[in-house]
Length: 502
Image (cartoon, rainbow, N blue to C red; front, side, top):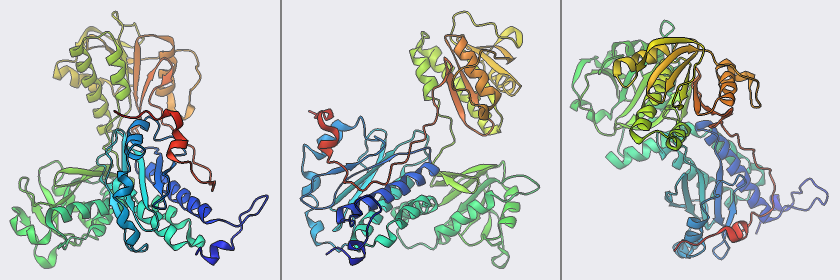
């Protein structure tokens, strides 16, 4: 029977009808979905989430997709869920499960452009959560752990039937970043060396963020700090090791920050057993399942056995690999009249200049001129254009990009000018908050054909602009409304759009 707490609750509205069991389930889905969406949007870029589910064994599959994340995947999902009953038949044993204890998880479906994770329980017969696979993430692992936790929370919310705590799961999922990273590290390490470990992950994550935020003579942390399973320390080659009673505590962020100066700009590493700093090791051998914090000034990366987990900056963990997404620039070059070798070389040049600007923390503007005869742009011209296919001249081009004004690069892979001034008439889409580089690029590209402009801001955003439009503008998805009507079935939602796969 439904709980008395829920049966007696009335919703505000014209009819003030008591909340039904279906309404309660829909409200649980809304809160879990919104908390998941907001949390992932802070960890990654603005993200959408969707859910395919059936609460009872004989239910049709329903889909909650308020922002149309699954558009374009109708054929594959139709084949998985409408043309086959395998998803239902493999879950017959869920009827015997304890609603409060057991969840059987379903792995990532590996759909193009999506990350998914699902599960089955006595309270929710089947659920599969989806979110976007952004192109610049370090690893899908933490996000899968996030979706896994959403599966568990929705199962528990519907099993307990407590209206008073229905929003709690959403709050938990909004702030789940550090827990998702910790869960992924724990799972990976247990796969490599088993569950018998003395290395606690939460203190490691606290230390990484604390050290990264600690300044030493006004400078951010640089260098590598490696966390090694205590039983494996004897296998390491130390160049310096501290006596047991004099090992600095990992909790003393200021002391550890000072010690990092001994390993910055080298292959040496500070070594920790998860509680204190044991010593300094040289490059080379690294015990398996070791966690590495790679501090790079204002940001850094977490790695496990060499593979990236996530990045960190501003006191938080993020999914980003901090590489510029230049997909739109690549598409423009693919559609141009340039031959394949020239396209590839030009894209590599653009990527390198942008990455150098981001690594060194300065802003710049690149005018990529695809005209057969390069434009004449006011600025500093050169007696002989720089052929940036030569590495020494490419390095010079990177330095010239630091100067005020734009760097003018032609389709011939030569720098034709620097410090260039971009003018033009006002156009729709200008944003005074974005500064002169961005708005000048909008105006200039609206006036000239066969060019595009790459704008790198000193605070990291990269804009690709063509014909007065920012091609890679971020889309902030509107949140869904907290309606409590039942989401439609899969077939009713897609209707005739479903095209069966052969």
